[in-house]
Length: 485
Image (cartoon, rainbow, N blue to C red):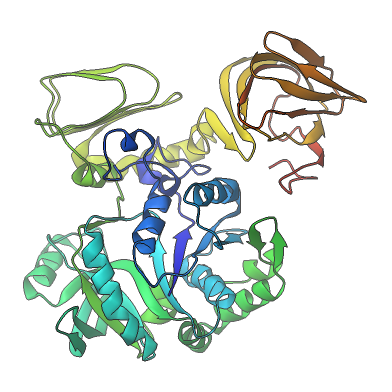
């Protein structure tokens, strides 16, 4: 069985933590269940998704399908888990789940069984999840397209539903499975209550098990234009460092369509296995609060927080002290560049704030003040007219690209470690409290020669234009030469 993890979403309802260039699946939002010491560096949602599958005995190295912009963060998170042999497929643009799964199926061997999962869901009962997978595997090996139906515990109007029909499999140890009779769109409250009362309906969780060849055959039958575009994209694939880069022009010809619309609602091979495992898609701040640890007053707290007469609230501090007095059922999220205050019952409407940010072309929707790069990160400390100040950390042994700027000069001051600086035709070493000036138009680079200690510098930029696209890359260790990304 090959785990296929779809990591292309944005998670805009979890703004301001989730941003387009650092989405929720790459964030550490849920305790990993370890000791207090282990929770200091919690696993991201992507990492937890991979770990819950690796806990089984039959999993092969995973395939992760992700947005090209997230490739280095995804690669680093897989390295942290020491997952050897993993494949990372880069989508040039998001085209929904049917094309993404097709890329993974074309990458795998035809007879491989794929376990397809979103990267940003929570499953609390791992043992029950493993048992459900064991039940689904032989059904998939018989040529069925298995979807897991989440056993509903409330009449939820935010999910689509799957209606189960006649039984098509039963195991004394693992449970039953049903033929899929019908897929239903998100219902109103009355209809949702009827679904739950009937006992025949399940939430559509977007988790599947099937053979690669069976999925591709059904995709070719019911959505031939999707199959053709993805097949051509994989025929033109290239290996870029640790990534599989598909043909951009061919992939762009694929319709933007989900696996449900493209295949599952049309095939006669669909089977549903009930899944009762403490599942959540963590689609809002209220949903995250539901699955998070709470204090005696029902509060979920992260960071430097002080409370008085505060109940049933979710409060996060990333950079400042947050104090609350006399609030109930609220969400307060503080980051270095934004603060969200919302009634917990209305957190689905955070998307309206995100829409306003898009309309105003605000940077707070795209990235945090602290931006991660394959070589480390930078934090934009201050900015004004014609200047910007950054704190930069370079990982041991890592280096920035050989580059130049048309519109800005840079002044570097080393505050920790040793810097190897390429400055025009010279290569110089700078130690703590030493500095250098890079004039406009000068070719330059920065490397951390240490194999064990990070390098930190303060960079002061000055000039008529300070955008990140004022970069001309000549050489780069991460395959970005000739780009501004």
